[in-house]
Structure formats: structure tokens, C-alpha cells
Length: 314
Image (cartoon, rainbow, N blue to C red; front, side, top):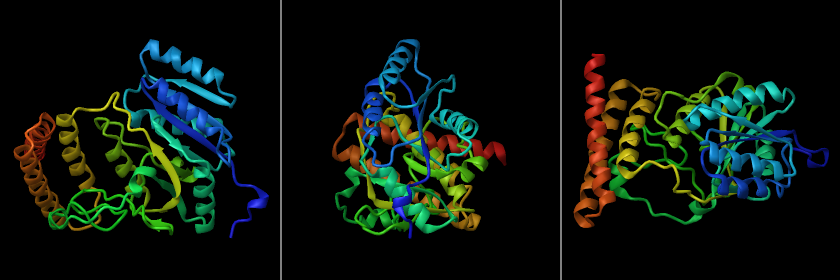
């Protein structure tokens, strides 16, 4: 057990942001309420000049040690890698780093619960996260989705490349194949791993790619008692067409890292893709809105992209 009377190890908060100064202000203000306050906060911003000046003004008014990085890396993965490099260089004695998305609000004991949990799990525990408040709504399993390998064991990366979320109804810590963007990492992990900077900015897939490689060497844990509110900012998010296209393309990339036979992985991916197309087609016919139609078109475009790339590689 961890003796909290002796205090917890230092950690640094790392925040990539782009043109969301209003959300960033709320997040920075909430960090003052953490039961275990961070040693420092590092903000990496790649906004246009007008928003950059807003970010500078916001950071100047926060009573914290805040390091502000002006970045020309356009993707969240590129910003995260820059934050990792800065963390390792500027804070040689900090044992943990906590990534937070700019449109999230960690609850009071978020950092304390995760760090305490990781220490209790021992030196093999490389990273951990909590769960978003919204995921505490119970959801019934969809048998059709399970049939098409689009859902499965909580916290796993399926052979189809689908990443299933952790079980938010659980009260016990659970091992997971992957962690979402708001997660705590041991310093030793960040020495050896980086996010895929050549992808298109689909952050969820970048999270899976990063942590699914880490789990080869380290144990990853989800602590449901650590709660986080996600504002789900609509700014700077891809439209339904681009989102569906990136989802399939990046699932294809994730499949390449799966630890099963190539035949099983390929079959699982394409079988699940058939199921996804059926769902999109049914939704478009049942409720012919632009979003459903765009998602269907984006999925078809992704399939053509993958087949074209595969043919070239062959």
C-alpha cells in the first residue's frame, strides 16, 4: 500500500491546444483544485496569432508555474511529442506526466487517484487513466455489433482494429490495452515512445497506436474512480466525411500492430468494415440526414484509399 502521509511523487501537466482559448481557461482554472497539485503545467499552442495572444494572456493570469511553448507542429500528435521532449528536458526529477485535452476538466482527485493506483500496482505499471463522466451511463451490448467484431472485451484493441472503451461501471482498477488522451505516464515510458506524427490528426487512433505499443512492455491501468468531464468542443474537429474516412484508415494502421496472425487480423478488419457499412447504410436510409450520408461516403472513400495503397505496396 502507498502511505499518503508521506506525499505523492511530483507530476507535470502537459496540454496540447489549438484555437480553444475559452476551454483552455476553464481547464487551467480547474487544475488549482486538484487534491495533488502539479509541479508545473506546460502548454503547447499552435494557434494563429490572434488566439496565441489570448493563450498568452490566459497563462499570465494563472497562479501556477506555467511554461508556454509556441509550436508550428499542426497535429496534436506532433504537439504531444514536443511536450514529451520538453518534459524530459525541463523536469529531470518529475516521475509522472499527465496529458490533458484542452476541452476537459479533471475532477478534484483525478491525478491523486491515478498516481496512487499506479504506485500500488508496482514498477511494471507504466500508465493509467480515469474515465469520462459521460461514460457512466450504462449501455446495453449490441449483438449485431459484436457479431461484426465492432465491440468486445472492455479496454481491448480488437483484431478488427476497433478500440473498445473501458468498463465505466466497474469500481475496480482494470488492465487495458490502450489509454485515451487524458492519461498519466511514467517518465521511463516517455523516454522510449512517441506518438505517430505522420497521421491525419485523428487523436483517438493516435492514443491507441501509442499506448498499444507501450503495453508490450508496461502494464496499463484504468481507474474508474478518477473522473473527468469532457466538454466535447466542436471547434477544429473533422466533418463526418473526414471522420469516417480517418477512422477506417487508422484502424487499418492499428491492425498492423496486432499480435494475432495476419490472416485473422485481415479477416477481422474487413468483416467489421462490412458491418460498419451496413450500419451506415441503414442509418442513411432510416434517417436521411447529411451526417449519415457523409459517414457512408467517407467510409467508402477510405476503403478505396486502402485498396489503392495496398495494391501499390504489393
